[in-house]
Amino acid sequence: MADDAAQAKVVVLGDTGVGKTCLVHRFIEGKFVPHGASTIGASFMVKKMNVGGMRLTMQIWDTAGQERFRSMAPMYYRGAEAAILVLDCTNADSYEKVRSWVEELKRNASGEIFLALACNKCDLVEERRVAQEEAEAYAKSIGAVCMETSAKSNKGIDELFGAVAKGLVQKKKTQEQGAGQGKKDGKSSIKVERERTLGHEGRRKSGGCC
Image: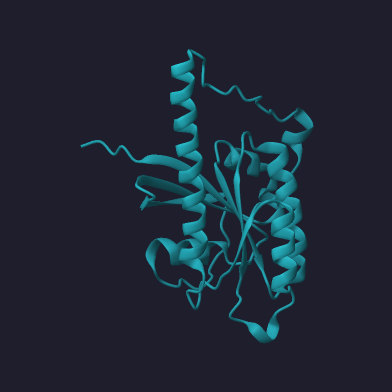
């Protein structure tokens, strides 16, 4: 039997070393995988869920954060419906870098994207450099949900991805309702979005992602 679950692409963004890969593995496999080699380009894993009466298949893209991979990032944003922005709460610089990822999303992603901010490594209380209140205020300013997470202690992982899944399902149900209404009204329900293409200068730039 064919899988009739709704599909959704989720990109995980953030500076190198913030724990993106650990978060994804904890959610998908239910175990903590200590940080090893940095992600090259991007990798993706799949998670199937039942949310709000809808079957949802999330394609979770774990992107590289190194600057040398940055020019590849727009390719991974294409078609994304949600983005999880990850910062290391023991590293203030990683919090500042999140802002650049948000700006890059605005430039390269098409359509409306559900945003979530993960304040990772919250188990390292004594080493904390980014206040929870500060992160929550920034998340609110960009319309994102904010979660305290720790891949090591398994704190907030299910809540983070659960919030993303609920946001995606709500979006898809709204789209389905709009499509049905469009048919009733005899109007097209297809939304035409302007495509963005990189110019020659953009393609020549080197950069990094994870």
